Image (cartoon, rainbow, N blue to C red):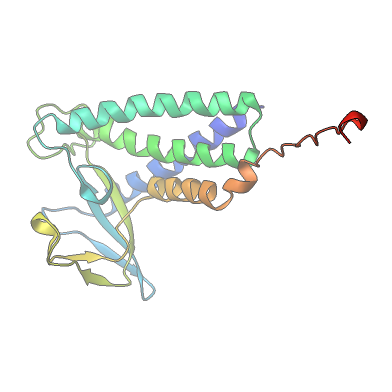
Length: 208
């Protein structure tokens, strides 16, 4: 259990994330560019949308850009899992290990979408050369505080366009954010600085 408990949290994050995404997929009709919405309160929505790329919809250009991104994510997941095991074996602070487990679970949750959704949910990216590793990621949580206009000087289509103050995200994104935030907020606790004792020079009687 010294190592297993952290990976159990990772698995739990993946299961919750996939359960929410599959529920949204089965519950909300998705037709073309119409994104079904359920408003919860004044500023929170369940807004079904898909993302072909990374965070904020950023994509790698080219027909095989998505494949490169998906494979990179898989390699990164293996590296993070190995890092978590190594840090747990080293006896790092438990808070730091729980944070890494959250980040790993969230990242793997989105990797499942990219790897399998193109095949099993018939949700490949536009003009995908193959179904495997070309699935779209499902997002649904929309904090609708402000649909703000971006500055005109931004490049491409971003300049002058309107964008939510908080991007639409999923449960996996939230756990990644929480894990990173915990590391930043509690970094002094997770990585305490070692106190170095300075030795005072010994003054000989002969030198007085």
